[in-house]
Image 1 (cartoon, one colour):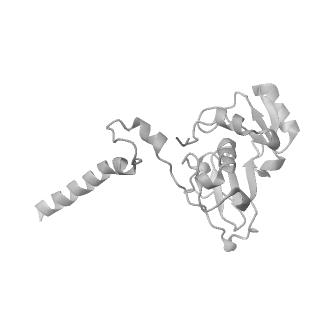
Image 2 (tube, helix red, strand yellow; image 1 turned 90 degrees about the horizontal axis):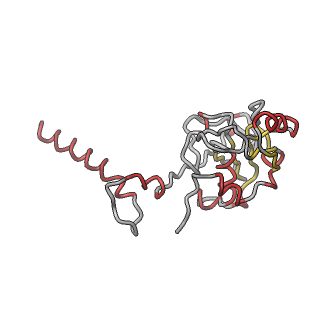
Image 3 (cartoon, rainbow, N blue to C red; image 1 turned 60 degrees about the vertical axis):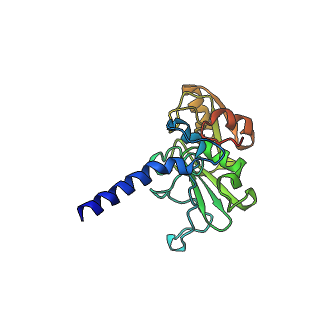
Length: 200
């Protein structure tokens, strides 16, 4: 009995150790150095379905579930509510993001991060007002680029505000430039994001 238990335990350990190698792309050789694994693996976070019992309309912004993971970087957006963002699809499902940068990265290539959807399926996107903590439609928000305010990954991000006045106030104290939704370009997101997975 003890021998069988030891063999089962050894099998579990071996399976756990083998997992990173099994997840590696086929065209890349296995390596004992796992530092590069984070760049080769993509965490696929499923969209959160709409719950009719929530009392919310299907396209209303909703509270972030504690277990929800950002489909771009894999972080838990509920842990950084001041930076969180969300996208709602026409079927009511939602993806949650730990920062505006990841929201924009997602919107630029929806089907790359979730193959069940395309940009045509997006119904609305929301960001958190950095001042009040309330949801604001991303297209109506004001973003600050280049301020000294660091995002949830302790790096440059795009704090969002519901009003231009509030955004200007942060610029006066922390620097940066106010941008509208339309002024956020793919080039800017590419330069700010270290979470994007590039295809080779």
